[in-house]
Length: 126
Ligand SMILES: [Zn+2]
Image 1 (cartoon, protein in one colour):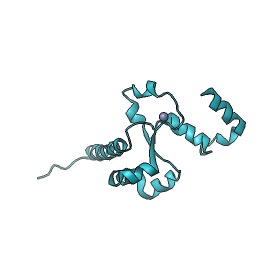
Image 2 (tube, rainbow, N blue to C red):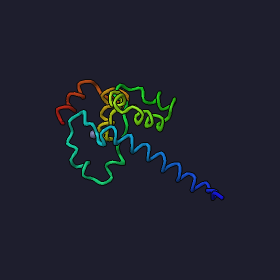
Image 3 (cartoon, helix red, strand yellow):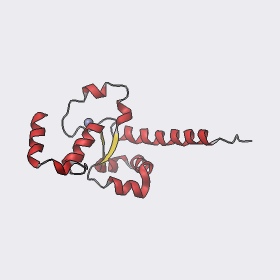
Image 4 (cartoon, helix red, strand yellow):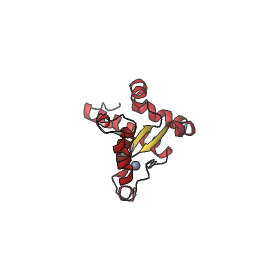
């Protein structure tokens, strides 16, 4: 007879399965930040915790809408099903690059406080 799992075991089992799908999708998308802003990532990439921070980003936005429809695991499964097509829709970003993208695209809740002229000052600082 199959042993009945308790709630905690069930949660761990599901979590493990979701992580497996997520890791598979991340590997298919190249395994590291696509670095769209040309930042030196050497410091992060050598950190053993770096892979845990990687986020799957929708290149042309609309991520929230899709996640509401098919949830984040659905997105991972979509990537696994057709990696070639997925590479045109999704990219991997580290949290730093993701926040910069949010500012640049006015998706960040505070980005409207920063005037356009400050953007160029920021770019010069990099
Ligand atoms: Zn990055």
